[in-house]
Image (tube, rainbow, N blue to C red):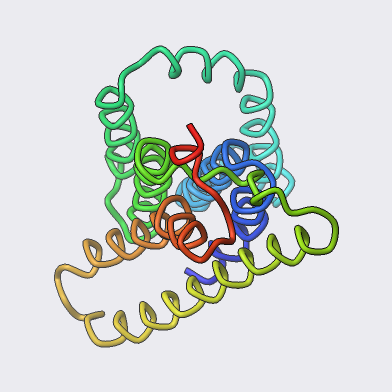
Length: 215
């Protein structure tokens, strides 16, 4: 959980303080990259017979994912922009399910939970909260910087608390047969905080404004 969190700090910052759409896309790319790394480790025993194990191959796989993102980003945005809210929800749920279709182990389930939470949270934000990272209530200069800094600190502080509570909770239920389900829900909860619950709180605390209110 902590390793995944470290990888995602930069996309979280971008989502809250720079551009929520790019932040979402980078978060998904990071989650998919982590999922691919888990797959790579899983197939390591087989790959050793074909390609010697080394971290260079792992980074090549991640680079390929980022290249696909950069190449296909605009086209995917256009296609998804023409689909309904319900269709987007179905696509997100299907993609999350595919992540655990091969093997529903803890690592894959956590990645699926993050993906589901990011996608659903972003759609709920756009439909109801209306948070946009660049809207800072007409604040400029140092006041704008401090506002953005407050968003990031508050967001990370809550995520840190969630992780600490999750770790304590996992120690209690680690022998449970439902630990995979609990970890899936915890990952989804963290992603929902990043994409919709946190932004909603930013709006309520006057650290951001809602497009829904200004329209």
